Image 1 (cartoon, rainbow, N blue to C red):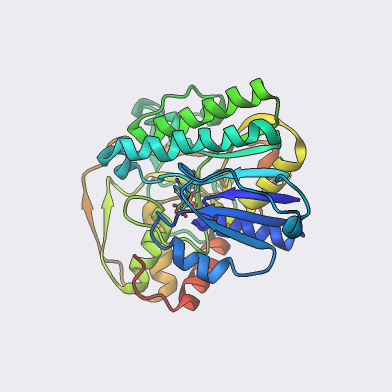
Image 2 (cartoon, rainbow, N blue to C red):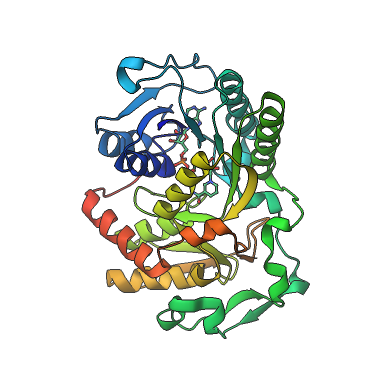
Length: 351
Ligand SMILES: NC(=O)c1ccc[n+]([C@@H]2O[C@H](COP(=O)([O-])OP(=O)(O)OC[C@H]3O[C@@H](n4cnc5c(N)ncnc54)[C@H](O)[C@@H]3O)[C@@H](O)[C@H]2O)c1
């Protein structure tokens, strides 16, 4: 299969390109290196034959001339659209740039696909659900029963976390969308364009509403990619600020498991919107992840607290779906792999 991946030098993009290549596919990527560390990732992770990177801004790039000498066809077989402005805080500071990168760039790729009509995979976000459940539907607990934490319950330090007061509220992708923040709105607008073009021009699509994705290749900033941010700060022995009480919970999905989901979606000819995350057995709070990382690295926690950030969900866990059968990596294993990768990079100070 020939893939066109936008945002190919990003965290998920580099992992996807390598995953597809391992499975015998070829990849054409496009990236403008606008995200921190994308150039570094490109130099370190996109050098194998079978991956071609085209350095250009999707907003202005000409339609890619597919070259039959390279990949044997004059169009891709599937598109994975990852290119985006990904930080909520930056979307508030500069909503115009956010809208350009998340809406207009999506339209551009969809315009190209009017002719190709190949499966279109769109990486959306759980931020389309806005602030999440109201406080009245949440409770704080220290009880991590095996049904709700599975394997992780054996090793997480005992710490209070936010939880839902009723299991029926876990049906997350049936939940009403209520996008907040320019980032949530622009990613949701992208979803609507994908849906409209796919129905009008008749091509398959899958919209993945992704929860927190983590893994090798991720550097993270305080604004985006919190697991990686905590890891790199812990490696440097630098302090972190925990916004809110640190008990906010996400279901963490290891990036390689997500790549398998993309691969299956591109081959399934579906037209659907699906929530994907690590599921209930891979839920963890900010404090738990930080505690685990510091412990594994043999350091001491250095954190201060600050006020909640606007629109921070206290609890998010993806509902089960058949895609969730592809979650193979526990949070503990995923974090251990990430630590090993980060230590092996030789990077001292990610920018
Ligand atoms: N990482 C997560 O936890 C997460 C969660 C939910 C959704 N997502 C979505 O997944 C996608 C990938 O996320 P990521 O974590 O890999 O982000 P990332 O910032 O690492 O990667 C995005 C890449 O897109 C490139 N890019 C941005 N605008 C571009 C443009 N106009 N033209 C060409 N390249 C451009 C950047 O240079 C970068 O390499 C994004 O669409 C994001 O919204 C990510």
